[in-house]
Amino acid sequence: MKQIATNIRKNILHIANLAGSPHVGSALSCTDILTTCYFDILNLQDYENRDYFILSKAHSAMALYSTLHEKGLLSKDELEGYYQNGGTLPAHTDRLTNPYIEISAGSLGHGLPIATGMAHALKLKESNRQVYVLMGDGESQEGSIWEAAMLAPQLELNNLTVFIDRNNLQGYGRADEILSYEPIDDKFRAFNWEVLRIDGHNHQAIKEAVDFKTDKPKMIICDTLKGKGVSFMEDELIWHYYVVTDEVKNKAIRELEESLYEK
Image 1 (spheres, rainbow, N blue to C red):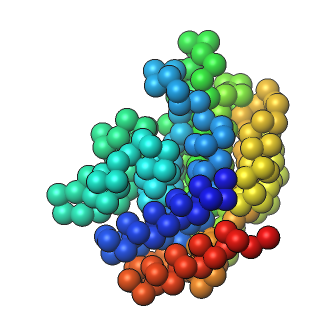
Image 2: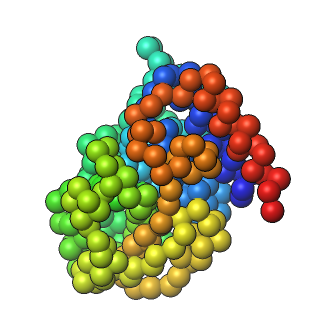
Image 3: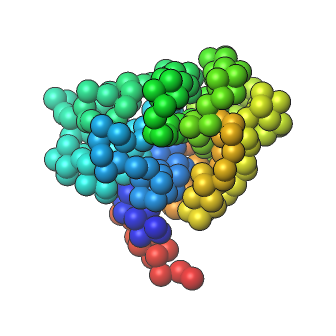
């Protein structure tokens, strides 16, 4: 899993460099969640009966694209066409660009409501398919999130699992200072969700949290670091915006490769 996550992070840095695009810190933050989901959790073998994965924090699209490429669901040419004039993949997700990109997103707060509807539809069909959502902590400030948070338990959607990438940095600073959402655990519990809080960079902890049995919708709060894996990007707001130059890319990739040999 560590090797896969490292490959995905290197892909993120590669396409960020090619495109001169921002949001590299946000993409690195959620890489371990995506790695665990796509390589140890999601049922994707039968496309028509696949599990759904919704990237609600769609400014982290580079992480999803790089994961799909590592999984063999997106070609190298498609990946390198990210954020290019006349290219293949937009800065935020577009569901028409790849069969495994489930929604078009960008405006925050939409993924959880959409996923709630999808999970409800699957329940009505008596399907065993699961719905997974990845949202940001700053995104939890959106009112639409809390409307869905009230509805999902009412509909008994135990086929819905939500990850919050809780890196405590959003576009203009610390999320819990801009509009405090803590104690977010207690707030979702009060809405009758099953809530677990874990290290969002620990693949085993992520898998165990997903496997936890409950008859409620599940909220997994993942404590993470923005820019995870590259020391000079970690927990630094500037990497919400800064672009990856050739020098930055080479330095970051060297560090990622060296970390594979650390105990």
